[in-house]
Image 1: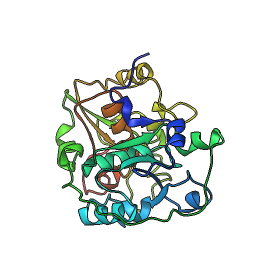
Image 2: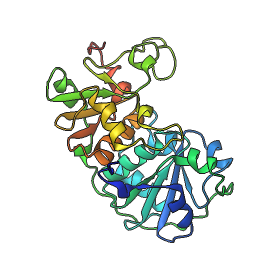
Image 3: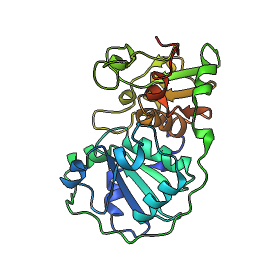
Length: 276
């Protein structure tokens, strides 16, 4: 069985268990609701609230370097810290990995299987919040090369050397849902013209771990998503699509893949823009 292109950026539950008390490793658990952290988390993990720490009120991702710097410093992270990302939500590890890379953090890894696998193996769980000694952190200017913007997406439509990958649920792609419910008021549901639908969770096994290289290659190549093309992933707000970006770029080694973090939240709200 083939190895992932960057297999070192995935860590398993045993590795994390053996390194729980390592002074230069910081576990980050991110979720939409702090109750998921308060009812149990991996010992030593710091909680990030996706809604308030990562997203702006309009559900765009916050790329303010000052906000990012403060968040990392309050989490006890330095530029030399090895960061392990995970969450109760399957896409969280990939989203955080992408964000850390956007801001130039060197050593960030994803817990394969996330909190779901940790719990299923009966590993230790903590309920107390982690006491953190603030650090100093120097973020880099956000790397625009890892992001796709509205103009990039619009210009890519109809190009044979570019593929748009919609990683949302089939209901969102087909226009039945806007985010996770039927559209309300002026909300427009559907997908970007020409986008290919590949639900992000199809890259995962039942236990939340990533499928093998061979299975992933079959999944994406069957939709004509190949490494010779420019690939742009998108979802609702850029989180699930960051997960697929991670799979394509770091597990399969695609060199030309970007995450459209504006995603459907931006595209669908632009007047007179084409949708299918």
